Amino acid sequence: MIGPNRNHKAYWAFLGHRLSGIALALFLPLHFLALGLALESAAALDAMLVFTDLPLVKAAEWGLVVLLAVHMAFGLRLLALEFLPWPASGDARTALIAAGAGGALVVGLIFLAGVI
Amino acid sequence: MPDSSTSHDKTLQVRIWRGRDDGAFHAYRIPARDNQTVLDVVTEVQRRHEPALAYRFACRVGVCGSCAMTVNGVPRWTCRTHVSKVSGDGAITIEPLRNMPRIKDLATDMSGFIDKWGEAGTVFKGSATRHDPPARIDPQSKKRRRADAGIECINCAVCYAACDVVAWNPAYQGPAALNRAWTMVNDERHAQRKETLRAATGPQGCSACHSQGNCTRACPIGLNPSESVAGLKRLSLLSLIGME
Amino acid sequence: MLFALQRLSALILAPLVVGHLVVILYAVRGGLTAGEILARTQGSPLWGGFYGLFAVAVAVHAPIGLRTVLREWTPLPDRLIDPVLLVFAALLLGLGLRAVYAVTGGGA
Image (cartoon, rainbow over all chains, first blue to last red; front, side, top):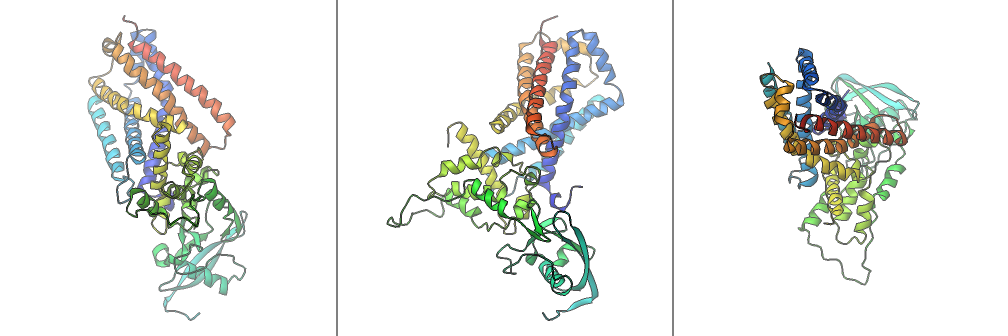
């Protein structure tokens, strides 16, 4: 599906940034609603938090944390491309792509270490 | 055309688009030869199998950009594409360039592409006359080097065909037009720099680019439209805060 | 203009997201309870300011991003997309600030 025309680093960075952005945007209203439960009582929020202890939900949380880190990393690369002068080689700062993805996975690992 | 050496009686499977939008791929089988370019393939099919096949070419030696087509999903100059480099399993698929209306078979209508060239403010307007001495531009100046980096574009439309944003947003000016606008903005002799900037930094200009980089990857002469568009974006943001 | 707003909100969001990730990674250790969170955040103008700014910036950044996605990847016309996203922006801003108040407001 990615096609030969699109099978390169800068395109994966674009896809990662876009897909993570969509997921995060769709998640946000749910996130705000959950937090808003504190308006009722701490107990109401606690009931929601117990739900998030389910393994599937924890896995989804891990996914969202990683996606947030990915979205920020690839977004920062875009800001670098647009605000900073390009390297003389004309390279689109592709090194930042692997670094960003790696950093996001590290964040994911730290999250896992905290919840397991 | 004399037969060059044929490699062990091997044949090449070729699928070529025939028709317009409602057409179909037609299959041909031609001898596989050493040192065969995709343009050689198309030429052989037209001369020996399908006289009505429509395609464009001119110089045949990788200078003019006329022979650009989509080969196995990637837009390229067919005279500079060796079959051995692209036919992994002895088969190649040839289609017209993407993002432009099809006229017939492998020929597309490039007038929209050329119109966008003008829309992005790329028409040069000088302020000197024939009575003035030639402009003295330092070739090593930052601006001139930026312009030089993009000035060799010959409008072959390969970057335009490679660009997904053009495919998704037909009004987007595209990498070639914006690359050209960038060279104009950096040309000290251009008397309408502000107008060019305004034309190229609108919502269908540089703002629509997502830096996917298909253009830079596809450019047959190694230009970097991504970098040019990024430069335009920087100028558009700087101009908002009055720094340009 | 939207392009500039997107870049500006991104610049604001970058340090806020870093801060939020640090908070998440710290808070999830040893399990999450409302009591633990609210004890630290309730009545805190610092957290209120931090996440209040976050909510505003996100309410600008996310809809503009989604607008581009809808325009490029769906056949929907602009006259449908723009109002829908304005509503989404209002939703995010409303729910977001409400959530910020829920967690940092008052001082129970």
